[in-house]
Length: 275
Image 1: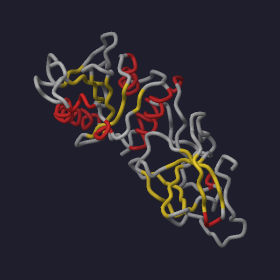
Image 2 (image 1 turned 60 degrees about the horizontal axis):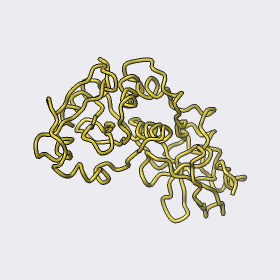
Image 3 (image 1 turned 180 degrees about the vertical axis):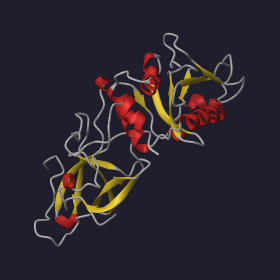
Image 4 (image 1 turned 90 degrees about the vertical axis):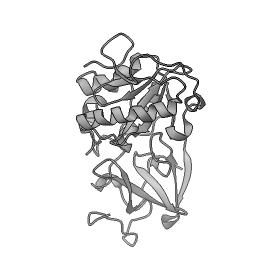
């Protein structure tokens, strides 16, 4: 089940309507692509927060190359996961195909309007000095993690609040995170929240637009210091809730598919940026 409360209330993004998809942001770097089926050249770009196989067209749709010079659109599953469709890029106007959903708008500061506890619990972390963000996995759901560079201040998001985690004496922070993930998993289960790839995409774009650091594949790219038993030992429990102190986070394929390469007029749909 997607966390629609997060999408609507936290990031103020509904599932994008066909009339309101976003153009590529200014920082998008064009990548040459070729669709041999229609002898069609076009550009894609690589958004952050998506699995490495996925790209975006300049008219806002997720695409992937399933074979050499064979690109298809992506579709979202019920839990926000992305699947390959059988609709080839260039075969249709994707805006007319209801199973094809554009990617969400690219976030800016105005997207965060404090309205409810979910929103406040997520944005509170931006009031701290945390400048690094990523996603960690718990037994219930992936969830955001935030930390301040060159310090032992590390927080994990539990759905309704962020918790600061503390390591034991001589303990590596990788072990601390793993241990604390059980507490966070219970919090996410209580909140009935499942964080998806689609949510990661939206959150990652907000982090980047705010000038902060987004770390992909946290388990691989976590700071080296997290793997060493060199952090100061924190005080208090290993998973501590915060409640309102300044600078601390937290207050309590299918028949609708029109792909038909033999049909007249199928010669390569404009994907949003001229070659």
